[in-house]
Length: 448
Length: 185
Image 1: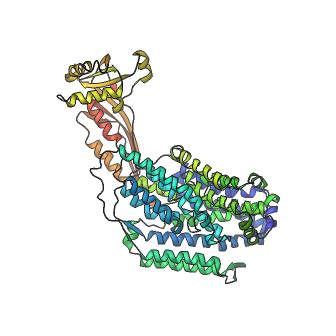
Image 2: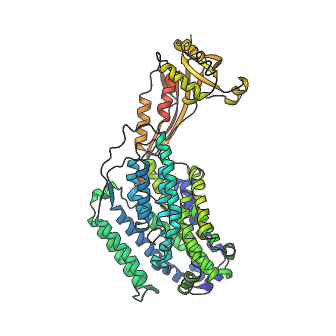
């Protein structure tokens, strides 16, 4: 990204980005029917609100930025989500557990463990229905779904770029594939207490329930669609390899694209198509597979990536940019943790991550090219990026709108007959009393 | 004569419930409904002041009222349950509403309302069932349910039948029941 552009643009250029993120956050809450029917039009509106004046005023440079973002960020981002979504949808957990506190806790622990490798959305798709089947005869169920959102849809995605979209964006900007594994102790500090709290809470509810005369018969648990574990390994390998193999660059429409990156996207396409061809239709049917989620991601993130261009350029300009107030606000790792987290709680966490990723680069490595700035940041100020990563991934769990799978899990649970807490009920009853103290602990231990 | 009596009794609630349950388990059974368990509308603070202490509202059939009075009196000296007031009661009512995206829950609501206890009747009932063709399957950012069943109504009638109907409805997720209001004869 050209740093001079970031010093020239005023803060007004970030309005379409803010409008886009607020649309994603607020329309599903206050006008869900309108949003469901019109989100492509709303996205197009915000994208054009940025693109038309941007190209009009900055001509060739703006066009180059748009193409660069499309080829180097949007395309890989969509490809990885597409491939992971298809592969995860090809794995079906069969059988029914009895929904005891211990069995439920094990499902949550397994989900949190696999989320970093199959993605939080993929893990949620694979495991939410078996969990709902297990607790189908329980009287008190909503807390189990809430802790599933905490652990499987959010916290569990911290360890690899495949786990959560923000981390994959970091990977596309040069963060090494295994760098986030360093965050394992942070994840344990959140996940273990969450599992313990859930177990105690569920045990308490379990004791208050009437005897389960009609509890679901405990059948042996099985997994079908095993070939998709091979595809999953191939996804991990392709993404990892694209980060370590240097095959040079090729020019596409005037944009210098990484050959390894393009090869990775081609491999991901092949993996997705192979999974679609080899997975029995019955598995997709039982997982209620549809193209809806990936279509939403493709449309919304097209607009997000377009509208994000000025905001990121301004932030990368550091104190010379129009968003110097944000830079001045974030001085310490704890500030990055809470600022990234607070915004990730209400806005989508992927663009929020990239915003504070660029804020850190702008504040700590101003004026340097991104690869050089990032390399220096990772060796001298790694805590800052760790704080951004943890804030983005963890605090997506604070609200239903913090992370995409949250709403999906809520919706699936409600359709299965679980009465979920309201937007504010979720926060008041669960996320504020349970998550916020744990995040304070994380700050005290790791980001003080 | 009204078919039910409401006894307003001063005394500790847990002791009274345990005593009444034990007493009628050991003799000919008599149904005693404690108002706070069944979801009746009560005037807690006002009654505490009026009756100088914690009071419980018990609903019993007129035919069993003497036995319940005798049972409460027999608790002395271990417990002191003092009947402060008695009122006749016959019918009751409560409002309810629901809004669910679950077809299974919708089926339970319909089944419960179709098999109401004898003596309970459904009124002002306005159910609405909608399907949204384009909303099937999981969605991440624009989740909308492909099915919705909502409505509201009033259940009224014989007091014990209303109590039973409210217990059945309030056990279903997504159904919200208002407190029971007693109609005085």
